[in-house]
Amino acid sequence: MLAVSCPLPESERQRYLEIATEAALAGGAVLQHYWGKLSEIEEKGRSGDLVTVADRQSEAAVLDVIGRHCPDHAVLAEESGLSGLANNPFLWAIDPLDGTTNYAHQYPFSAVSVALLVEGEPHIGVVYDPFHRELFRAATGLGATRDRQPIRVSSTAELSHSLLVTGFAYDRRETEDNNYAEFCYLTHLTQGVRRGGAAAIDLAYIACGRLDGYWERGLSPWDLAAGVVLVREAGGIVTAYDQSPFQLTSGRILATNGHLHAALSEALLRVKPLGFSFLPEER
Ligand code: IPD
Ligand code: CA
Ligand code: CA
Image (spheres, rainbow, N blue to C red):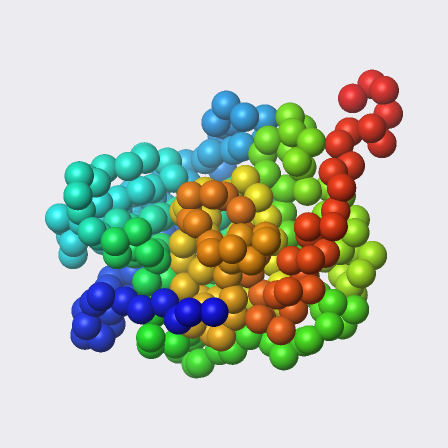
């Protein structure tokens, strides 16, 4: 596995890490403010894909910080989209509330995810979980931390000893590639498969060794960009399911502690889709 290298000098990586931190903390304060106070929860088009005032206000707070410090940089933010890209090497990828379904149900497992991509590659990543007050940070070459203490991936080397995590995309009712079969098979092979409901936290938990491996499809760059930096800098591996190089825009990720990578990849590739045939007729 080739190490990722960053074109920015260390002082700039440090500076952008501080800006990403300020932005994520600002978003987190908004999430705490609206906790339990949502008067309206909308669907964004696809069934189950929710948006709330907390998503929008958190995004405004994050964008305010980025805009003040880096007015020339491009931004891809979940709720407001892409701006300023024309040949810009700097792109911020922002999920102002990762885990909206959890948040809307007052299940306290959500985060703000802020990443900086340089020439298309994520190099700075901050994930802030305001409900557990945990701040995960990483920058290429500078390591990964939780609450400013260094973190490492786990040392679990066998699937039969592992605890994994995955998720199910909003299109799961429309596609046979819905991850149901993979979930069943890996549940069978391991000590368990969790479904956290916040991809950024799933990746942060791989980085700090609470979980050993993560796979999911149907994701967006803002779900993944910060967490990818965390996992890589904590000593883990991030690829496509078949271990080919990870593509942020593919929506598909396999992230592990490294020791389990080949075994989890092989298991995923062995799975045959379950489709919907197991469901009762009235679906
Ligand atoms: C979702 C979460 C969830 C994942 C979904 C994502 P959102 O993000 O990360 O864990 O399974 O695919 O879309 O909509 O809560 O920001
Ligand atoms: Ca998300
Ligand atoms: Ca979101």
